[in-house]
Image 1 (cartoon, rainbow, N blue to C red):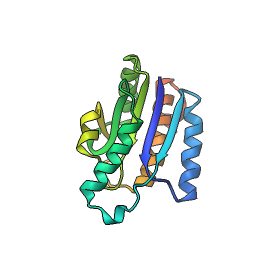
Image 2: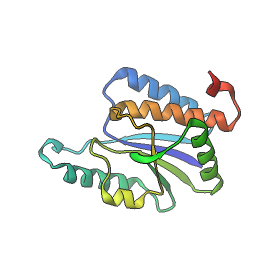
Image 3: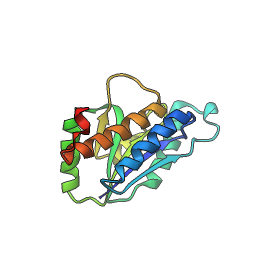
Image 4: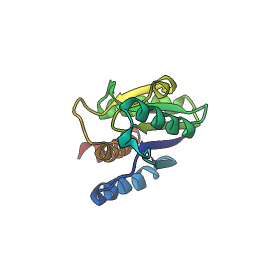
Length: 157
């Protein structure tokens, strides 16, 4: 199964890009993996939050295939430990989907259409993080999940 991460907007900080790249390179040792930063919506400063969510939602939905298992990284999602997430991912892998797709939305969250398309929602924390930092935190956790599933010692560092 291929694992995909979509995120709205680019990451401006080089230190974050370096960390994201480091973990993306580690993840591909375990599974085919693709990270795509979707372009920011143009003129978003002149839009309401609802319109921006709708336009971002349209962009996200265009990326998805019908058979995808879609997981939103959302503050209202289910909170898991690293081991719990690894176990959950193992269960999703066993279901035989072609792609497991994680999505990081824009600053105002997801449109109703994206929520309706999602198979699951996961929260990384009750804390609020900048969206660019969430990318780094998530790819590290994704790497950690794979090492847990393989019984490797990284999780116990």
